[in-house]
Length: 124
Length: 111
Image (cartoon, rainbow over all chains, first blue to last red; front, side):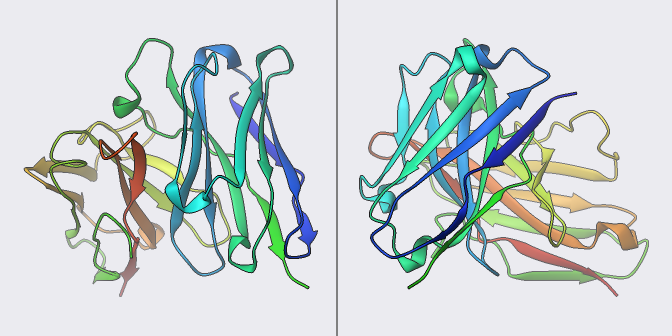
């Protein structure tokens, strides 16, 4: 069974940092792109970042303003999101989601499956 | 303000057909495929439709997707009470360096 499990969320003060992790199992992790998507309380889905299978291609939403860094460790079947200079408006559930397989264009990918999410609360 | 525009709500009675629209532009829906996601309260989103009109294994065939030009639609035929959820469209956008864009979501209510 394909499974994604996020961790690392919690309460952090404005200006602080967090490192989110996503542990993958049930598929060959190193052959799929991966993504982070967030959802503020009561709001819609917002794409955060994507990374290709070999980390050769990385994309960020402009609204992250260079504060977030996506990375992966294929040997550990893990995806990461380093979030710095956190703001109150970054408060959200952060989901990791599997993207498309190797050798398929990013534009043709879909996000499937998704993890259960980890809550990041930025508050003083 | 989402790049893809969806109505905030839609509703129907059991057995009815309900459609959810998703409007974009040439840089996203007009040149790339559309995916749809279903989300129940307190749960993670789930892929419902991919590549405009394809259903993943296990998705009932009462769910269907279509696309024309810069707009896409999700149709739910034979609406059931368990279909009450939030639905989001998404597509790759060719603007700048490339990015994923989502619709604001549509809450489907079964009356």
